[in-house]
Length: 137
Ligand SMILES: [Zn+2]
Ligand SMILES: [Zn+2]
Image 1 (cartoon, protein in one colour):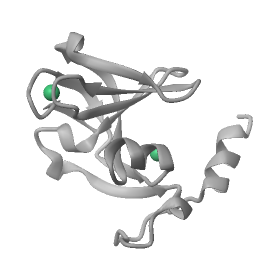
Image 2 (cartoon, rainbow, N blue to C red):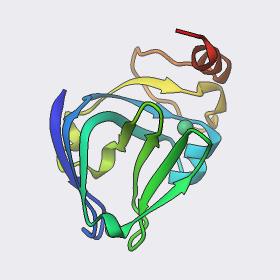
Image 3 (cartoon, rainbow, N blue to C red):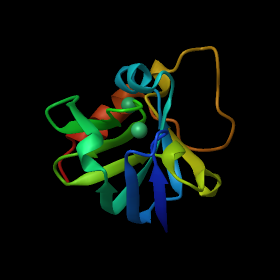
Image 4 (cartoon, protein in one colour):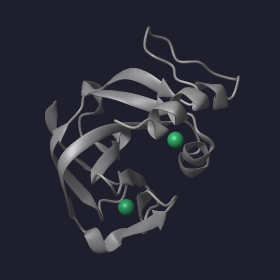
């Protein structure tokens, strides 16, 4: 965990997170792929605050989550799970992206065949993620 500051490409939105997971995941799901044009690298964060919030457009991508982007430059900023209130921040917007380590891949069976990530980390299929998501704990 670390604290983190970042911003969108144009600077209209600035973000501060009191704590960010430096181990992050890549998501290959169809929604992320369409949203960011490739795999989505995101890190869970707490204590998230924004400057320039009026420049954020929030898109309701499902009943349980929304995604935010800068309405000026289009930078993808976050995935926000409504319940519990949890942000996954796009790793690339942080000022020090080199502190992050890829530690897991989601929806590996949705990944296009044209590329692979190296590293020995968990790679979960859609079925595995759905089973986890619907299990009662
Ligand atoms: Zn922007
Ligand atoms: Zn995804």
